[in-house]
Length: 352
Image (cartoon, rainbow, N blue to C red; front, side, top):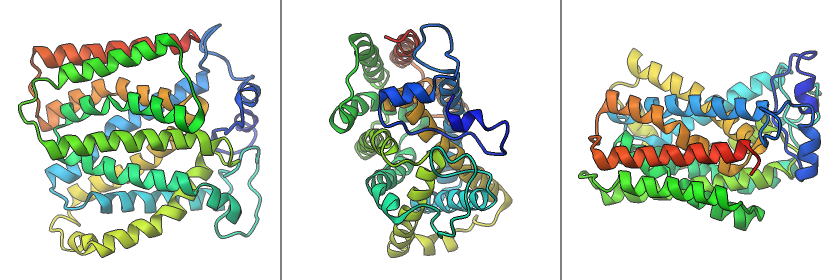
């Protein structure tokens, strides 16, 4: 377990992720963290991070879909802005009350008086991550609108291929043949599942694949920047909000989306307010779990977790929103996808 986490029982500090500079440092930081079982490549803390991500992701997709489709809210960008403002507000309050820290190795937050809580140089160092995050959030929110939930999760499963490519170019990460083979099974299953989609929409599909690319860039950038910035998960989230918030605010104002939001007839209805509030809360916990899972495990593991949680997303989406009928091709494709995700999890746990 990391030094920060090991002190959590003595200090009222929430668990923080670590950002090791290399593999040896990462091993040192998690040395005290029990493995799932002997010989496993994943720690218990890493497994908890993965499970937390999957739980938040399932619920967030459902609530975002409800806001955009069921209530016909006109702007995915404004929802992203609300989520970002909420996350920054939570982080500011927690840091001001000294409940959390923004840097690795800082067991008790110090009162440094800086309005941003981090040095300006560190803030600028995370600029590429913030740009990747902004693209990821905007495109992902828009991609939910035009495709039914079962088909959305099927297409998103191909993100693993983009992630492997981006990790290779941005971080020099290479994977073993068993890992590559399990990813191939996932992608093959995704194409089988989508072969009978009679509601094919070129724009909707194009946006989802663009979301896959931006997701891969974002996760690979977390892996690279997180290891060199000295910030933990909360610190990375804070810098993202500080840098991306003003840009997103200007963008929504320029496009007239803020005015559309003010004129939205259901804006202050209890149902929509509840959906929006839960969406903002889930976005905060989801972003934290993404940073935690990616830094403790890897960008590819984060992507595979996204595939494993699809079982629940597809089930809930099909029940609540309807959409793609589950014919033979779709069922076979879904099973292949889950089988490939299971293979990856097995090889990861066995350290292969």
